[in-house]
Amino acid sequence: MSDAHLDITREICPMTYVRVKLALEGLPDGAVLEVRLKGQEPLKNVPRSAREDGHEVLSLDAQADGTSRLILRARHGGR
Amino acid sequence: MALREEQIQRYGRQILLREVGGKGQEQLLHFPVRVEGRSAAVDVAVSVLAASGTPLVCVAPPADGFLAGAVLEAFNPDARAGEPARASLAPAGFGGELLPVAVLVGGQGVAFAGGTTCRDCLDATARSLEGPSNPAEHVLLGSLAALILQRLALGFTPEGQGLSAFRLQAPALAAATPTRCPAHTAGN
View 1: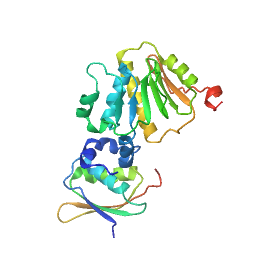
View 2: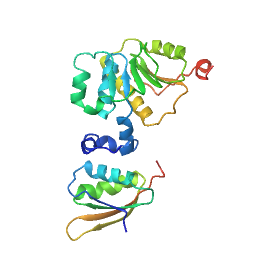
View 3: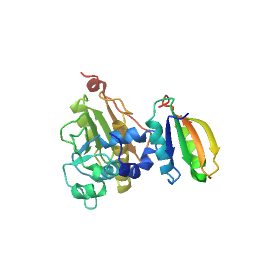
View 4: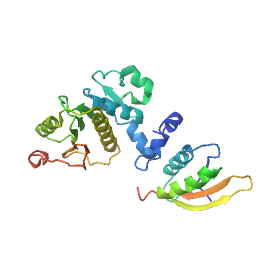
């Protein structure tokens, strides 16, 4: 069960992770964000950037419609 | 105050920086800087700060081709100060009012000081920064001055006490060599 949802399927780099970063910043520590994304660039860069910022990547699953579902847990302790 | 959509688009690459983020960008947008005088290095710093969304109050005309007034607003409307300045940016020959944070940039280096810094210490350091340098060094020092101001706005440098200077050492800036005057910075 996620606390917030974000659709970045229509965004292009670098706005893909900018949207995710702003969404994570707006969530309390420990909250879960579900991100719907599409394409190779966000699939590769968004989970990596989230980890580098100290957040947890809980899962990444391909969906039947060609998009992917990324589940992140916001972590703000390292900042 | 949340960022507007056009601000997210404009500052997206800066928001990506770990040290900035959305909250840091909001801080930069609400940290007005007064520009006390002009020099090539100050003009470079003004350009960098204006691009990053720092509100600026320029009290002296810039050199041809640099940003000020209507040109500055057209370049980035966020760079128009709507509230009192919280820091000052000035050439090394600074003679204005000392705000809580002062960043001085000369041909030989950059100095920054908190509001409790002794004015005599600051003036002595400012004089030591004056001197000739080539255009590339002005770009380097102006960029460094803008970076120092941004880090101060983001809260990365402790407020208040002390005076620090980064000096130019040919052929390039050497590692930071902070100077501190115990007689003046300890509140004596």
